[in-house]
Length: 258
Ligand SMILES: [Zn+2]
Image (cartoon, rainbow, N blue to C red):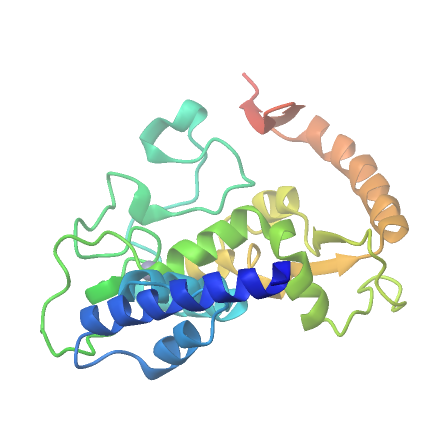
C-alpha cells in the first residue's frame, strides 16, 4: 500500500465517523450552504458548531461583509465616540490599529445574547438569524461565528493574502502588474490616517477601513515606496498631533502627549 493510499483510507474512516456524528447532532433546520460546505471538506467537521466555524473561516470576505452589515443595523451607540484606552482602559483598545468595538466596552455592552462585535442578537450555533423561530436570542452566546471570523481578518488581514490576491484577479493594486509571491497586504487608507482624519465617521462605516473595501495586495516594491511616503507624512503629522506612535517588538502603541 502506498503512503497516499494509507492517508486516504485513514481520512475516509475519519470522515465517515465525523459525518455520522455531525448528522446525529444536526437539528431539523440547519442552513443548507453550511451543511454542503461541511460535507465537501477534506476533513468533515464533526459538530454543527464546527461546521459553522469552518464555513465562515473559508468564506472570509462574506464574513467581513456580513459583520459590517450587522454593525450597520446596530448603528453607532448613543454617546459613543472612538477613543483609545491607555493599557486597555474602559475596555478600549490602546491602538488605532485595532478596530473600534463599542459593544466590547463595558459602558456600552449589551450583555449575553447579543454579539460583542456587531451588537445584534445571536441565535443557535452563533448564527445571526432566528432560523429556528425561538423568538429569543441564545442567552449563553456572546458573539456571532461570522463576526469572530471577520474580527480575526480585520486584525490580521495578511493571513488571508491568498483570498485577497484571488479577489484582485492576481493584479497589483498599485502597479497593475501581476502579483508576485512576495506581495503584501496593505491598507489603502493607512490606519493612522483613519484615526487622524476619519475618527468621527459613524462607527459601522469605520469598520470598512479594516475590511475588504480598504485592503489591497501590492507587490513589495510598490509597498516599500508607499510606506516610505507614509513614514515621511507620518513624521510630519506626529509633530502636529497629540499622539505619538511607538513601534516596538510587540507591535504598535500610541502614547498621548502631555
Ligand atoms: Zn455579530
